[in-house]
Length: 98
Image (cartoon, rainbow, N blue to C red; front, side):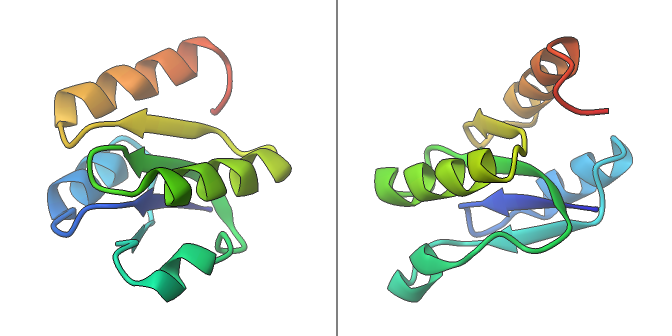
């Protein structure tokens, strides 16, 4: 099961953090090219992380809808490890992901 990061150009820090937190392997979708906006979620995705300050509103909305259609948890965060950690903690407390 993989985690998908949507947005951002340099996500190695987030990739390492998610892997260390048990959410690996991690895939990345930059979302800068128009054809990337029509991407479907990878088959074995278990979590979607959307970098809200790095993607368009349209792409964030499409990814959220795609995740909701598959009953996948979605985490919205800015480009900050501490915010990502807080969002993951809120998600865990809500019982959305193991």
